[in-house]
Length: 500
Ligand code: GLN
Image (spheres, rainbow, N blue to C red):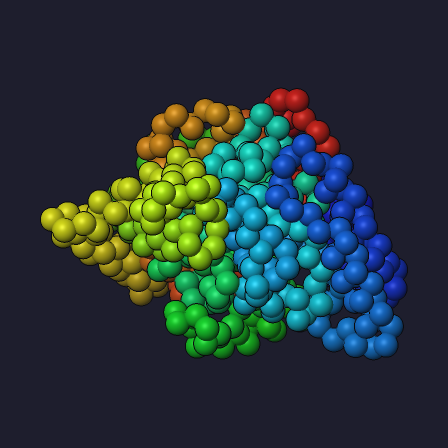
């Protein structure tokens, strides 16, 4: 393991400086990342690479810079998007056979904002089909390999984005998190990943899974890098009815000036339900993080979030129900996969959907439809909605009681072996127990690298009150000024475990 030395592993602040001073051009950076993405094609972290479009955009950015038109902080910076964000002219597959040939006629709001800032899209990252999964093994385009150990999963559903950032194939990448899909892969790949408050980032053009939970966010190599990208993505958009009319001034300031460390000492809550029967090595990593934060003058207190045990069943009912309605649009008529020679309309619907969706997506549609059906609605969907409120209330009570942030595990353990959980969906769902509660509550939450367990990186979770992303990122930044876990790099190629 080495510390970041190559320009390819430089911080965003350094890349911005290098572009500004002419140390390298956007085209040179773009070529370098494209070459490393091609070299690391065994990871399968990209579904689509866009070398021609990226080079053309980089040349345009360099020309703009020459004539003094590089006004945005991120101008000329290469990045990658999860293949769930619609990109005009470039295929958006959502990891599914259903959308294997889908080319959106417009850009998602996130893509639009980052394009307008002058960023360069290197390609579209692999993901679990329709963002359903915790290992990236549900992708129609094959699994992504974890750069730290190629026999292990990178996490999911944004596994391609996390692996690409970890392997240095892109400085940053976008992702989405419905129940943990940014935080869990960030933890497994040793990168910084933040899911902002629900409503912070527009969902316009982000293919819907569970609309009351879906939220776009960022993978980066540090909290400071993540802040710069998040500030560009965030903000009100009238095309998404749940996008918040919340100002982004603090985020913009953090992006421009670099993150500060917290001005005051914070009260950090440890939710006791998250630590019961936790993997001992992971418990130790979190204890070390806790001690380090206490040494900076922060106070750590125990808190209770008593409804935590209901979070996973609640999530899988709510997310499945919403998915079953959102995915009804893929009927073989308007867009997406259409079966050959349909006998009649019913046959067109049935065969197009049977052929186009993978097993996990079908499982969610079936269970979600069941939970919404007459006779079961009250017992499942309505009950889940009530539990969701109680789970949210637990968090609000903790924050009202004087807790500024929560510190918790992200995952029950480090990245597991490819193929290990694929035959047992319930076991796979158990991977999400620590990430779904904050999702149900709509809270901003991040995974910050905090060490290694069994030779594999692991993250700690920070959860903040609604719209307090800057508070969260400042604490993460302070931690990252004291540790170098976030700067560790995986070996170029692995055959098995990576020893420390
Ligand atoms: N692993 C969770 C699921 O399969 C979360 C997915 C996500 O956040 N998109 O639903």
